[in-house]
Image (cartoon, rainbow, N blue to C red; front, side, top):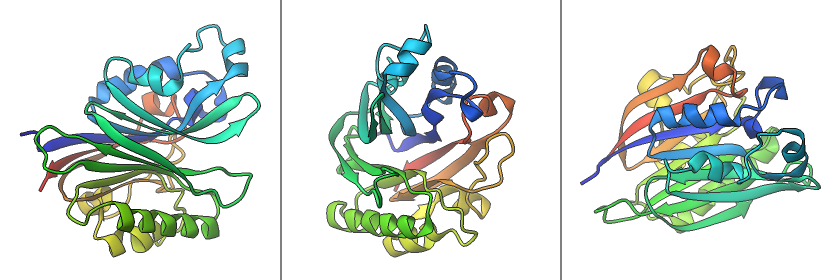
Length: 252
């Protein structure tokens, strides 16, 4: 019985380097493959962008989530959040296991910043219950984030059984030093943030070149937490403005 999962979360900056100087989607795919994660939570994923496709000769023909999944992750789900003239972007989940259901809930608090909660149910072989995975990218403003955290908490209370395994990961944009996501979401739902559990505080992930802010998180319920690692260094800083996080989880 497969009781252990390797999980990653990454804001991929739409496949462009810091300040959007270079297209790095091909390098990004290779680096993601090297992580060897079972589940990958991605934010700022382009589903389509006609101008980039015209401008870059090696722009992937497939949407970024399909291009990144390739043969490594047989299943994927994409939640389209922001739509504009040239295309659209949102969150994605890549999985080595079947995604049996998925839904994308609009949690935008104003029309200039479109956000969503991508909720997937994943069938792990011989697990008695599906794994619930929610990929998030919350807003930049504190008042909007508090509303989004409340909607997220309500969704979990309504749709995720209390004894079902649960992972909520992504870019929480939680700039506040008190880590409001932990207090407003994790504590009421009996969840733990993997870096807080292992290292005493969420990981510093932004900006990737010299991380100061603890924006990205992995919250879990129903697992023992093993490794929790933030991937820093020049190689990763060349790819996105966020650091990628990985963790190893064991089903209780």
